[in-house]
Image 1 (cartoon, protein in one colour):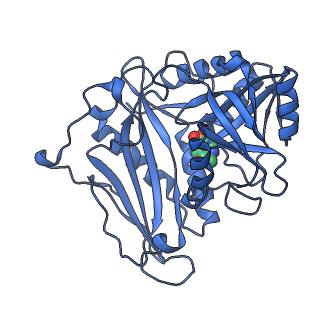
Image 2 (cartoon, protein in one colour):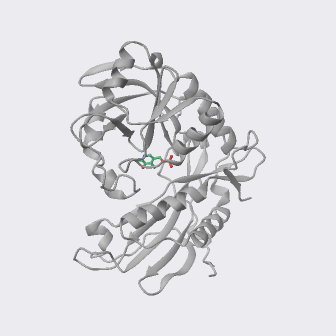
Length: 357
Ligand SMILES: *Cc1c(COP(=O)(O)O)cnc(C)c1O
């Protein structure tokens, strides 16, 4: 299927940000977007790149009422030699299809979506920032567009991709965050939609996050829904804990989002010969280790921040400082390794980088 390209007129072009050091996250979009449509009996059709702009959907569109939405987040990086790198993009498209299956949405045609994404990036390549830590954020999304007020899977969908320049996640370096262990609200239960990247999971997480922010915390650490006993993930990141010489992360048991960064960290530490356990980790074990000095480090992993060190964990009103409130040694090493591969500062021994220009 051929992707039709309609370029923005000169007067539709936006002003690009002039100061890359001022880039934040998620506010700036480029001049174009990719779209394609799906309909029962017909499949995907009309792949196209158009000027960026609002999409008209019916007020009865099923996404607005019953939440059939799935999305992804990945990045393009300006490589050291001026080329453009993607990091494990096929993993994001595999995941959007697993999310779609859970939400009774159609499978995205991966080849077509990847081709559209690359064409879009190349068309708007002047928007990709170049300085250290900056990148182009890519947001593939699928929504149910059929107008129908009744609960069942929709018969029409729109898939689209929007992109925009984002800053180094940490303006003041790798700042350790304070996290609040949430022992009332839950993010996801086994059997629910926690392992799908779908909007409803985030809507339901807002209240706990807002209450934690009011108390000065950056993030909420979620516990399992059944017992509020085991650590799961934090915000939009998977969690890792270093207790003595063991690196521990929650297993993918159905309530956890299978992060691409999580998977990359696991692969790297196995390569480095570090003892890695994917196991249910009781919060009591974390707190006991924090108290007697065996908790060496804690960090979150996700595309936006890569590695986000935790400097303080607060559980049942008690604060526990982690790694002296600094970024731990392993956190730092992992951050450096992943970033070096993404930006082509060193050869990619893992086969993760896809060069598109
Ligand atoms: C996206 C996301 C992650 C991180 O996934 P990456 O593929 O590493 O970016 C972790 N947890 C949640 C809830 C997420 O939405």
